[in-house]
Length: 502
Length: 102
Image 1 (tube, helix red, strand yellow):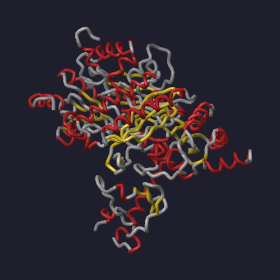
Image 2 (image 1 turned 60 degrees about the horizontal axis):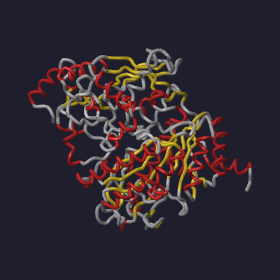
Image 3 (image 1 turned 45 degrees about the horizontal axis):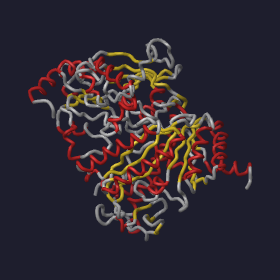
Image 4 (image 1 turned 120 degrees about the horizontal axis):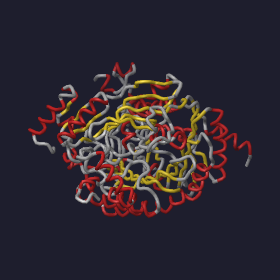
C-alpha cells in the first residue's frame, strides 16, 4: 500500500462525492483480486502490486469524476478490464485506485441499418455476441481470452484477434469511443468526430493513439463497434508434416493465396508438437513422424467457404501435407478461443510433472525471418532450462496477422513453475525476455504483435525500437497527464517528468 | 452427498448412486512413452511421471467421462457460437482427391 491511512480516508471521502459506498472497495480480498493477471510473476512479491482501493463506476461521468479526484489529489489510477493482458497493463505498480469497469457492461444501441453497436466498455465479446446472434450479427474480435476479456481492455491494449486476417483486429473493429483523459476531461475519439465513421480525413488520426497505451493515457468508457453477419460456415483443417521446411512453405502459400474467407493460418514447430504429445495441456494423438503442423481457418457463407477450402486443401497437398482428420481439426480450433481456462503442467528435466503457469513472449515477425527468430528463441529458453527446472519450453507457433501473409504473431510458450519463481529465477527470466526482444529487433521485427511490451525486460528495448517516436511518446504523456497519475511506472514513461524531459 | 458434490446435474447424480462399473476405469493402454488412455478421448500422463511434485489421482469412471463429455459440449458450443455450421475437412479432401486421383 502506498497511501497512509489518513490519506486513504481523504481519497475515500472525496470518492463518495461521485460514487455510492458499494462502488468503493477497500478490503484486502477486493484489492488482491485486482492485482491478479495471467502472466507469471514472483508470488512472494504479490503485495507490491496491490492497489490501495478499487472502484466500480457505472458511467463515463463517474469514471471522469474518479480521475478528476485522483488528479487533484495526485493519486495513481490504473484502469482494469478483464485483467487478461500478458504485459501487466492492469497491474498497479504504485498502489492508488484501480478503476474496474466491469459494471459498464451494457449494450446501449444496436443499429441494424449501419451495422454498429454501442456498448459500455466493460462488456465481454462472448456475452455481446450472444445478444448480437439474435439479429444474425457478429462482432469478430477473437482473442485467446475471448470468454473473459472485455472490450475496454481490447482498446487499451490494441488487441490482436485470432481471425484478424479476415475481419481485422481491435483497432479496425472499434469505430470510436468515449475516453476519459488523465485530467478527468471526456473526449470522443474516432475518425474525425464520427461515432459510426470508418474513414475520415478530418484532423489528426487520434484513434490509434488512444488504443494500445496500456492504460497510461486514460480510460475508454463507451465504444461503437463495427458488426458483420454471423458466419454461416466455418472450416478449420489441421495438417501434419514430417519436416518443418514443408510446413513453413505451406503456411506461407496458404496466407499468400488471397482467399477472401481466409481468417488465419498457424505454423506449429517441433517443440510445440512434442508438447502436444506430452498431455501437459491436452493430449493430441499424432503419428510418430509428425514434426510440424499447420492449421488454417475460414469463415463466410458456405458457398464461399467450400470452394475456397478446396483451394487451401490443394495448396496443402502440393506441400506434402497430411490431413489430421475432422475430430482433431475441429476440436483444436474450437479450443483456441478459450486458452485461459486450461489447467497446465510442465516437466522437470528428469520428466516429472510439476504445476506450471503459462507465459508467452511474442513478436511481430516477417514471414522470411520466422525460421531465424525461432532458432535463437529456443536457444534462449534452452539456456534458461539448463540453469533451472523453473522453466520449460512449450514450443512455438507463428500466426498470420494479416490477409497477405506479410507478418506473423510469433510466440514462444514457456511453462513457469511459479511456486519456485524466486528472485534469482525471476532475474534470469527478465534477462531472457530482454534477449528475446533483442532478437526480434535484430530481425527487423516489432517486440510484440499482441501481448504488449511494458513488462520488465522487453520494456527496456522499447526506446530502441521506436527511436524518435519514443520521444514523441514522452512528450504526449507529459502533455496529456501532467501529474503522471495514469498508470505510472509503465513503459519507462517516468522519464517524461525528469529534468530535461528525455 | 449432495448433487453439487457429485458434480453432475442429471437424475443419477441427484440420487447419488453409482454402479460398480461406473467407478473403476478399465486397464490403461499405452499410447506413447509418456501418455496412457483408458476410454476413447480420455488420456492421462504415465503415472511414473507423477510421483514427486504432483501425485496422480484415480478418478471414478463417471467423473472422467463427465469431464470429457463436458469438454466436448463446450467445443460444440464454441462452433455454434462462431458459425451456423462446420464444413468438414474430410469432405473437401475427398473432393480434391477426386479432382486429381493419385
